[in-house]
Amino acid sequence: MTDDSSWRAMERAVAAARVYIDGLDSAPVGATVDLATLRARLDTGLPATGVAPDRVIDELVAATEGGHNASTGGRFFAWVIGGALPAALAADWLTAAWDENAGMYSCAPAASVAEEVAGAWLKDVLGLPASASFALTTGCQMAHVTALAAARHALLAARGWDVEADGLNGAPPIAVLANAQRHHSLDRALRLLGIGSRAVVPLATGDDDRVRPETLAAALAERGGLPTIVALNAADLNIGACDDFATLIPIARAAGAWVHVDGAFGLWAAASPRLRAHVAGVELADSWATDAHKWLNTPYDCGIAVVRDAAAHRAAMTVSASYLVVDGGARDAIDWTPEFSRRGRGYIVYAALRELGRDGLAALFDRCCDHAAALAHGVAALPGAALVGGPGLNQALVRFTGADGADCTDAVIARVNAGGEAFFSGTLYRGRRAMRISVCNWRTSDADVARAVAAVAAAL
Image: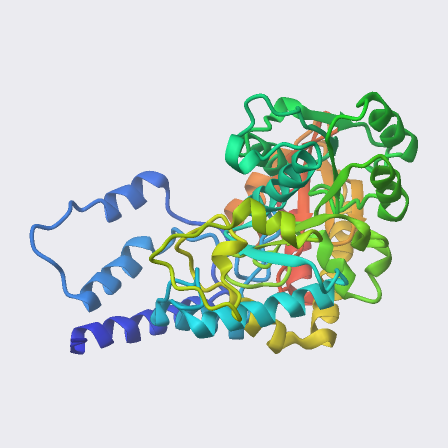
């Protein structure tokens, strides 16, 4: 039975969470203690006898103090990391309390239905086919694996090969034509699927980081009828560039290729009337991958895969056993995801979509893009700074040079992050270092942008 110590542990966790969240505006954005300190605090040795739950929580909070990057706050602009909407965060706590295996309806009826409803809402707001199947995964990495497993099935089945039964040994090779500015989670998905990263043929892009129609057409012609996947971007992680889907997808489909879209964050532009033009034609693809824990601002972890060919998706993922109880009228996530046991991710997606609504979704995405542009132009106006990419959607790149003309980008990033007012990350873009600006958080405000620009000015 749950005793007083157990309830105190939960109450103290809530109290600690409140202190942390209430302090986001004043606390340093980056961690303030080093690796050695965290190891010394946490590695106290496994006790011979158990410790009371409330003491465990108290000591965990104390041991990790200063060891958190406040990525859930409004001044974290490194990588593409969202925050956690209040309803989604609360739903995540309940998900842990309910603690069901959401793999099947028979194990978790409410979780199954919440996920079913959330999936239908997702397809609706993203403008994707209502008849498409979907899966909620650990992140966009596994969303790629899920969608590309469906692609592998469909392409090889069309050539008489049962890849689920016979594997890839002896199967026709699959070519993957991918935007050269792709995220390398795509490559890892191909490794996991046995297709291999060497199957990737990078498609050169123009100065706008988008694939040219003639480039794609020529690459398809060179494949000579081999089963082919075309992977396009919505948007790339440096400057938020989206491929010209309306032009490229018909070219690929005419050649018999499967078109997959990496929309880890950019696919959400479809939910905004103002931003929708960036992804015009994306609905023509065969599969899509995105993250809820990026721009939708759900807690980690929650990726989303959507597949036009539901039969191929199910064939690639489904599994059965005599002990599993199947309700023919219900949706079982086990038929659509790579996991047997899984968390009830549908609750946080359902909660986030209900909290925001259609208008709130559009407002969130529009606001983040406005903040990214203001931050990029504000920083670029500083002496020694230059805008080198974007702003595109919610992403931009800037670079810094010293009085002697030497690049000092990484040094400026390090100074800003050490100061605690904001947090950025660096990247290599067109052979030179740059600072990435990524705005994905519902909490980011005009004041946060002003503080970040001032922090960069101070670092310079």
